[in-house]
Image (cartoon, rainbow, N blue to C red; front, top):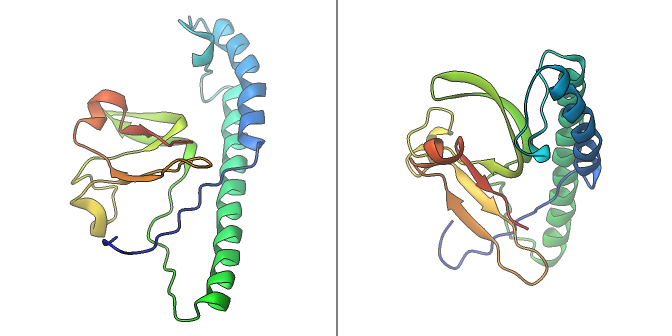
Length: 174
């Protein structure tokens, strides 16, 4: 990114599929948590053991929603490039960074391997983290915060403090 560049940010998810999955599994996991002796301080923190039937079903449904979101962004990027080619034939539109939010991934944090579900958040690893591509490692993982109609969007970077504060997570905006 450089001063004066025109940058296009596509903020697109699974078009309601992820929300529907969250709504349906929130109920199932609240029941499952109680069945597994898990006390929830807040209903919104509903969970289930990942090896349970509900845990595996939820993980599969989340992966389907993530695949849908990735496909949506690829289609939108393709259509955007077609428009730019027609209006500005010499314009180049390389993909700078693609990030998913509302994911559930197996990661290592504080010496433990665990699933981190970022509902309403995106990963924000700090500078030097080995999971960040080499070209971006020095600055920290890019964090894209898409605005909504009429509000600005932001490009940030994960910090060293993000691990201790929120399992290397940041809000994803809009």
